[in-house]
Length: 548
Image (cartoon, rainbow, N blue to C red):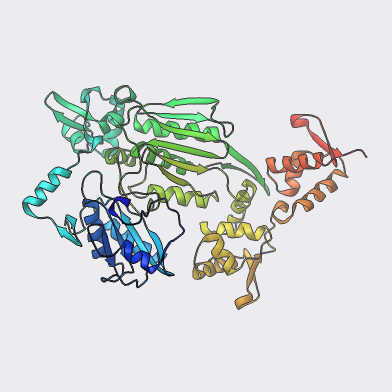
């Protein structure tokens, strides 16, 4: 956008606000123009019109908190402001990509919304108006001008174009699966396949579309290039993998088989808490399946030379799909914006119960990761070349702590957002309203309600009143020793155990609450310090006091 003469509010400029003096702002934005719109507030209709016009023209920037004559009135990019912008953009049909930034003009914050020109197709307001930017105005197109504009900008979706494959090449078993998923009486009815975007009538007969080939061919990669999933396993952070698998078949089979393969490779964390043994998946299966389904549904099938790729790393699963984020989705608005590069493929996976409805997939991935007390996922657009999704398989909460939370939940329901608070209390922390706001990124009211829920359920006790109120773990809940003890305390406990005779990793886990890896690290530390000796190998390994 820098070519228009205003500052390049780059989508990846970061969360820190940009800064200008009043004179710099006045020089940069002297007046409304083809590429600049001023707004006092976030009225939906006017925001819609500006977004549509910039999307259909050459892009532009909306300045919110600026008067018609250029006076800086102020409008910070608060969550409420951002929500209003997202709501206006979501009401637009096929807007261009947009971002939200905060700009400080002599310490007065205004909100800046850069909007990109759509590279394909055109945008419409919620009332159906097609607008373009002309000078300082957003002008609706009508009559012949509208017909010419639409003709010039019309877009044929690649996923419903002719794949050059006769419909009778469809696999019978896959045809039956599609018939059941769509509730048809007969999948042999060409009109039904056409209506679903899976077939198209050509001069030579009825052919499968790209989506039809992906859903109905047993080996679509034989016709469509690398329409498959490649899985690479890495033992470290290097570039050399030690296992490679290709997952082929219909889109349904690819999602199912790839999800199954990755879940088996990841395995589970086995934790004993109390009298129960828990096998905790290292990644929620629903998250993995949704992420793979999204990659398959939204990838660019025009890029026939690249496959969807899954990397298994020691601490994360990385899913990379060809093609950038579809307009208007960006890294910033990925949870709010909705778009599907291959809407028919997504519809197939949704009907087969392998994907959420449009706009719900990212919500499910983010929410289920949080519920599992894992680090949040990351979504990255690699300069329009690929989309990368990173799913951490570790978090600030250990498997032992996750198992303990499950044990506590047997005594009463805990909201997903409260689980982290319970773990922090079990670690010995005195919770305050301010600390809860920091941990959960919520406001004071939600923090207070979370603490009250845990108190009323008997999981924490309130200490003090008003400004000095804190909350501590209820004595009725016995947290594992590893939650409450510092490293020196854990060392002392192990040395005390060894005084009664040799101990094993399993005995240390039972007494401390550490998981297998944590107990091993603790024992290795004591051996390295010369305080313990290790004897035996593998399952026969024991530890005893070092000889002076």
